[in-house]
Length: 401
Image (cartoon, rainbow, N blue to C red; front, side, top):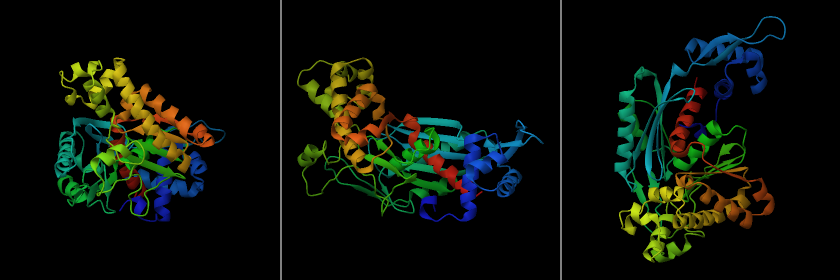
């Protein structure tokens, strides 16, 4: 059961508070931990003493003294445990193994199948197992695994429903992701929605300041939301699915709605729009990158063409970015966030995308809300989901220390 699904005990809250301060600020004295956490020094000393006996924390150098004995500094022992994380992005599957300081020990990236199915889950399990097998560390120190995957996940991580874009039928997978990973890897496994994992990773690992209100745009199809410092999942865990759809609607109707309230493709329709422009006779390096066949143009080709200053590719990206910006403007008005992070793969389009998003938000959002909202690309790029889920596992480990 994740932290989000239960009320923390007093001990778990103190564990989490103290160990997060040590992770972020170590080496650090017990006195400074007490000041930051607002826990009394006796409590901090008792907890830290317990962590040292466990091998989770180590004592190091002496701090500068303001009079009397020099205080001993403590820091996390990163080799006390290792965490496996696997996440899906628009074009890739990323696996990482990190230590308890979230230093990446191993990282593997592979192209993902252009589908949502049990085969994809099987490939994620295989990737995690292969990374563990190749690790040159004590395998018994692997304390858990995290899985970041798109879709609406039930509370126990045992079934998943993938909402499809452009009028296609949703896909339900009854295979237990949690059980599948735990049976193969022999470690506790935590499953989280990709956008939720990414927004938690950005807040916990990426941003320097204490952001309370944050929106993570996972491409154009999902949103991770943090309100008052906590992830917002909604009543049934389905919050963040961006766009409406109906099984009764035609595909043409859904496509026409995409830039407004409807669901759309992961790449905001950028690739489709570029193909249409080329088929109308417009010149672009994209045709050469796709071997002369516009139908074979991929999002990777779009990113490459933008970097080569191809005007058609830039035009398609700007159109997609402006359309996404209007959806973000709606969220800015609704939620009034401090920061909007753009991730999931589309941020690879760079300045043309971000500038178009910013222009749309400035034009369409309430002035006071738009002025406060800072729009930035993901700090972790393709690794955002995988690092987000290892962050979730680390918090679990800390809480139960």
